[in-house]
Image 1 (cartoon, helix red, strand yellow):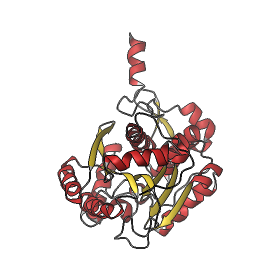
Image 2 (spheres, one colour):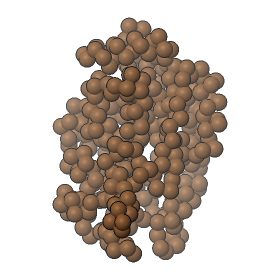
Image 3 (cartoon, one colour):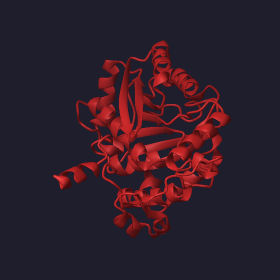
Image 4 (cartoon, one colour):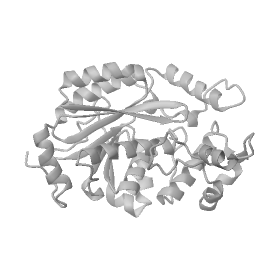
Length: 330
């Protein structure tokens, strides 16, 4: 009975069933693929191996090890001061949006090399293209307003032959635009994903980082650690998450036929009302809200499409069920 209970604790049941990170971290294997993680591994109060999640270098080395172990990524790094994302949570987004894609195709997952995804705000870490390509074989265009992020993501892509063939990064020249300047005339995407800035100001972002650090640390933290919290453009924008999403939804209507499913994370439950109102105003033909949970944190994906049911059938046949067909007859 004790063994059974222990086995249950080893599994993070809130993560998606296909998420490779549902089990607790296998530090023996992680240290084999990434010896640089060793100095950061400690014992928790229960005697199990862990790291200090308030230490940005420890988190970065854990990410390197996870990306190597599960996705075969030999080189991964980010510049000091840039967001170091939790890999399990990012993987959940990819798996849930893959489910949505499959449901749109009669329960059959479209062939990976037929699926093209736009990652809005690819970041210096390039996490979503890595997971989406290595898990499902999707191709990606990653956009960002920050040249340093684009340069860093390109280094990761260039170091891996598979990513080099499947992922392209594009600099967004106008920070007020989301799709214009990125989606080219006649270009088609099956999915778009986004992890929007959460806060409405630099001060709010710093306060949020302090709360996170204090939750992770035994000692009270007086000021944010710069290379834990991320860059300004990664963490905050005018209007915060809700303002960003309203703007993105409005602009997505201008590219209604260029993407089957637009999607985004929505961290704040309280923002859902504004998001759904914006989608109704934009004229979305279908909206899906997909709950997610990691540990004590709950989040959700909101996905929407402007494609009519008749055009959806045409899209499925032209894009997903006839390999090699690049475009659409509408």
